Image: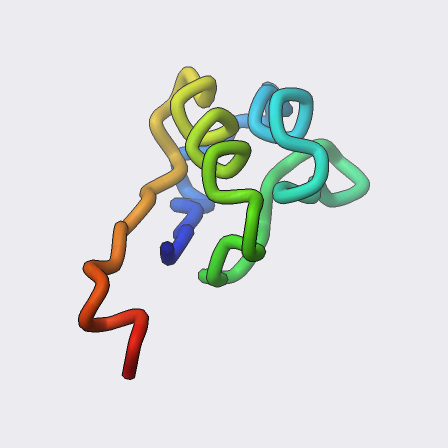
Length: 71
């Protein structure tokens, strides 16, 4: 699954990192400035949890279908 953070929407609530600390990192000012990345294996549910807890809806999750994963 691909995770993308819209930096313009992030206002630094930090709920993504609070709910999914093994997936999301915040900068020194408390903002999520991560570049697009693939969720670590086994942490997909945690990545989703962090995303759905963002009050600004700044995190987008793109699920991959099985065929894409096999490529």
